[in-house]
Length: 248
Image (cartoon, rainbow, N blue to C red; front, side):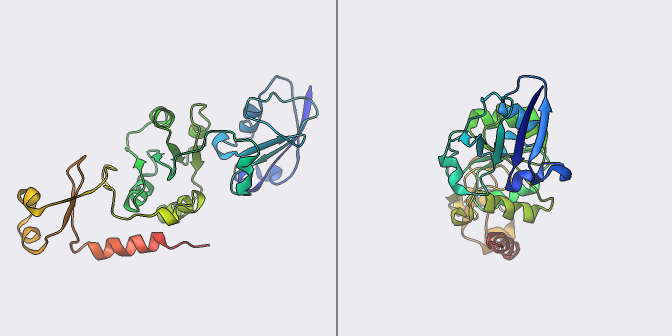
């Protein structure tokens, strides 16, 4: 029988049973286990972890747990310097590009509205999300803990809030995206990059009043969706302003 001591810090305690949260846990087990498997046995998804110390020494996910080990597990949010000790994964792209699971459609729409690259479809299953994340080096956003535990996912985040506007602010803060907001540069329908277009090129697609009163248009080259500053623009601008203000 092997016995270890393990403690989870800061936001990782969101995943730990309340009785074990923010305290050193004495844990016994009788099989060979990697530190990654050990961490996830406490329901902590590996993409949430940024630093693992064993007996004061930084280790990676392949480390095999030994009898008597004292283990400390940290997320990135507790200290931004932890990544420098021993990176557990390659750096994500900057700004990060996302793939969003099927239950977070409004979050995907809001992030696109603010200019961020978010792949989303309401028929994405867990396997599709994981494969896209792995092949395209995307960060998974989900409220499905078991999805984040899939081994091929390198970068991911479990969204804590259940209200879309709060979810959006949570993601903006977690990934330090506030300085990178570029609203109205992506299609909220398909994620394509918007481009300016001349009125003559799309005039045949416009309703008579739109054709009469508006001169400036954007178009999504991917899906053909056309955007202009119509009567809905004030509402959209208010939403963008609401989401773009960092709240502490």
